[in-house]
Image (cartoon, rainbow, N blue to C red):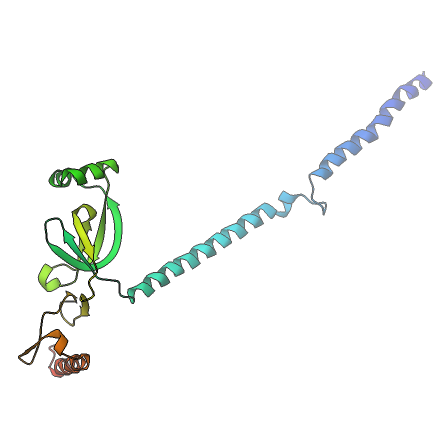
Length: 213
């Protein structure tokens, strides 16, 4: 009986080491080259944190670039555009930005049929541009939106001027005549150095005037 039992146990004992070796191989396949589990070392989290850091730095540098660009173009004068509108009025100013907007029903009913159909073909959206028109003493506003369908033509004449004034802000337009101490002069008859001289004198007179606290 004992010999029979030993003969029956022998095949089982021969297979067990192979099964254990196979299970150990499966466990070893889940480990990295150094013999440790990748999730145990936290490498996915390291890659995630590195990617988040790179994205954050890119956003910071992108924001600084936008701020620097907007700051630089502030000191660069843009061309003055003179618009002839379809109602035969004129508007001059610096283009600031453009956008698409959806006109109201009353606005669509007031425009011509060709412009209305063009807007409807663009899903009801029209383009408009914000102009810095200056001349606050004349218009009581510094900026004005101009829809594209109201523009008949656009030009950039060389005689248009943009002048920064001490009062009322910017002046945008052409100079018809200059009055210096009661003397009326044509713009072409006045030298630039004299204009600067008179401007310096006017600034000195303003500085000498008493200011009420």
